[in-house]
Amino acid sequence: MIVLGLESSCDDTGAAIVIDGRLCSNEVITQMEHSRYGGVVPEVASRLHEQNILPAVRRSLELANVSLDQLSGLAVTVGPGLAGALMVGLNFAKGLAQARGIPLVCINHMEGHLWSNFLERPLQDDDCPFICLLVSGGHTQLWRVDRMGSYRLLGSSLDDAAGEAFDKGARLLELGYPGGPAIDKAAQSGDPNFVEFPRPLAGSAGCDFSFSGLKTALYYQLRRMDPATIASRRQDLAASYQQAVVDCLMDRLRKAVELTGMTRVCVAGGVAANSLLRERLDTWAAADHLVVSYPPQQFCTDNAAMIAMAGHFRLMQGERSPLSSEIKPNLRMDQLATN
Ligand SMILES: Nc1ncnc2c1ncn2[C@@H]1O[C@H](COP(=O)(O)OP(=O)(O)OP(=O)(O)O)[C@@H](O)[C@H]1O
Ligand SMILES: [Mg+2]
Image 1 (cartoon, rainbow, N blue to C red):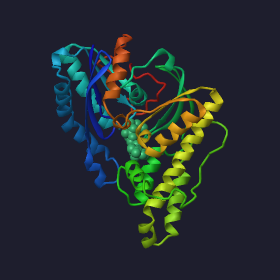
Image 2: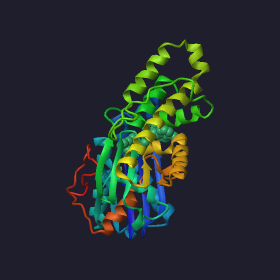
Image 3: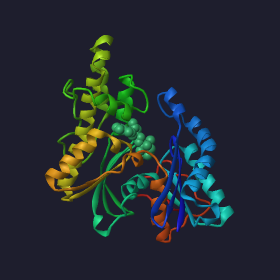
Image 4: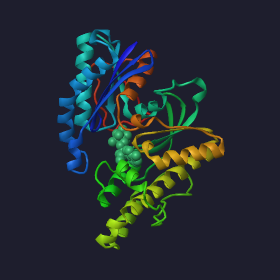
């Protein structure tokens, strides 16, 4: 089975080919224009997806050495995400499915992130059940996964997502956009103990997160410092802030493991690319004899490889979506994207 996956939920236009469950190409065109505005501008994102989707599809076919008439199915992100951006991908997929007479399957973007853990190594029966930490620009959630398609929410952020905390923190620190990679880089040469930022909800019952107080603490910390000191201690501030975000993620993840007694953990989403988080996960896994996985760096942020793989799995199970399918900007991971 040859599946073309399409992703356009935010500011990355992606197209990827999966052949019989093996990833054969993955083309991502990232929209750099948004860095001028310090965040994603929905109208600009939709217009750029329109421009980029055909070149991305052509390139993914070329790289996989596949022609359009060889495709057996199409998988496309329908939510969650920006409405106008999602519409570009879905309308393109519908047109192609209609023209080629091939099945279409709608994919939940967050389930796609989860699948990014199984792009280089196929999902095995004994991988389930596990805990999944979804940690991205718009989500910070802990899920119990009993099998692919069966998800139960254990906890989520009560305010900002962790990726958002990185982006807003980087803006305050004048480190640019997207903030996560910028803070990660600046923190490499910084002192993480320079400022003791709060760890909201750490040690609390349950598995919820909170990040907005952390961002406010950074705001007030910067107000207490003069511009010259900020400039000379920017790396230290970034390292201290990053450490606080990662401490919160690790605390809540440990709590989920404690509450469920599970020994397998998958982390997914853009923040899974964070080097300190990855280091902490490795140390924890070794110390507590846990099986912890996170995607290869290039599959943490948005890509179509994860959508094509989720599509392969769902098409193999016989799932099909009608050509009347609509976008679902507020879709949750435990809601079906297919109808
Ligand atoms: N190395 C890193 N360290 C910390 N955060 C990072 C890193 N790399 C990327 N991020 C963050 O990941 C986020 C982007 O991830 P992703 O593309 O999965 O989010 P999204 O698609 O916008 O949101 P969602 O998946 O929730 O709809 C941004 O907030 C970015 O700052
Ligand atoms: Mg995403």
